[in-house]
Image (cartoon, rainbow, N blue to C red):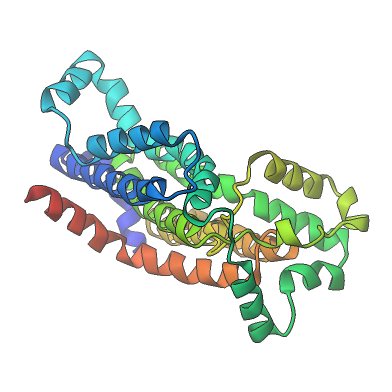
Length: 309
């Protein structure tokens, strides 16, 4: 694996870059269609026609169902800018797709969540609720602050490796890293829509007291209050994405692997310690992260083969 990281970007053919982008486009198109089915359910809310139209337009673009003259004209106007956006749009789109999750899962389930299932699994596996008990058993700032910092490293884990590959001019490796990352996001987002779980943050008291005095603790909770989507807990996309990225970094940026691996492990522990995720969320996220990383090349080939028919 590590040997693949030394390939020079100059060796990538234009055809390889095109197929990598096509696979990413089709993955997004499939996701938008499958997630958009949620808008056919009764609880879809008053904004559903706008969301449905956006999903349909995005799916048409991703699956290549628009007139070629339109995309050719866009490339002709600003080819470098279009190429740049074509590489980066999946990562830039993720916050918007995350924001709509609460709307979509309410459309399907009418604000019903499946936390009781996960809580029963917690009790069966651990004999208690680790997301509540862990911080109470270890109420120390020397533990809390590093774990909350690791939890916040999620954003570095997502965007740091692709930014580094892009800055190094390794555009092919950049796209090969982004595909499994986006596959992991999309699979988890479908769980959040069709099997929503709120997570312990909405149901248990936060681990306050002395721990709440920590500045990193406070930052983490402020960020979650400002931008979390209800129902997006199981499986943990935080853990799955950090797992997928650790494996991709090992492949493309091996020297960075120890840093990302330590942050990913701390993130998983911090997610449970901070009461942001059930331990079951974290375990399921880890397993799915590994599986999706391994399945990503096959998924890419299937998407390309389907588009060639």
